[in-house]
Length: 374
Image (cartoon, rainbow, N blue to C red; front, side, top):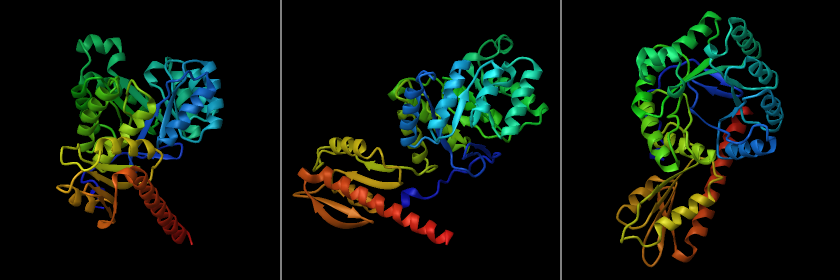
């Protein structure tokens, strides 16, 4: 429907790389990722969390690999999940070499922190041979001491200079399949750093406001910061960093992209905040529907409006719309009034309609694919 038209945002042109089977950069959709917070050596717990993230729609999952024991555990994890995995490694090049053997899809490792040139070369050559991209991750909280002395404190310019030092190492080794992140917990610093570097390199940019906060405050801070950059066309993959269940990071990430029409996955709810005009419990209905329909990843516009003032207009623009009324509420399907439903059966009835519409849409998409392959 109208709200799902292509975004007017003109995205920055970047080099396309592949993280497993997920394209990042170029004309690829902006990827949404999260990071496990289980002990990597607890294989069962980590696999369970990765599966939950994948069910929520995660395109990529990052796993911390701080030791060789964790590297061996990573190998076991890799065999049990299908989503592309990024290993988060600091300092020890041997861990990078080991996870490369065990099937990692991307190495998050800063070349300048590995040490001797021969060690850096070993990692880069292994990545090249196996087609594994590298993610350079610069963080305001861990800037090189030399840059801290030079700038006195973290600044956008300091973040960019740190990034360019790592990039220069890869340039000398003629390795271009990397993506870059420049993260700070301060929104203005993060946005300024990404804007500075966006025109200096062609590689994909991974966006995030690091250590953003808890579920509510972190969501707001991330939405503001990432929204500013995405509106500029900057960003090829994102992570919303929350002190919360990592699954929430995926949900918020997709909500940010949906609001800017940059990704279209799952249900896009259009719901009023409710007022005394409402003819049914809008907030309770929304809470119940969101909880019940978390498993739906097929794009669908669903309106839930409590009265007849704004209800018909919003309902007409949605795939399925609900407008409050008395003695019964009016349901719109495909932009047209279809039937009425009373409050006592409202949630069950509306969920059933949504799932039927999802199934219908999925069947139509499969039919299109089948015809194109015939």
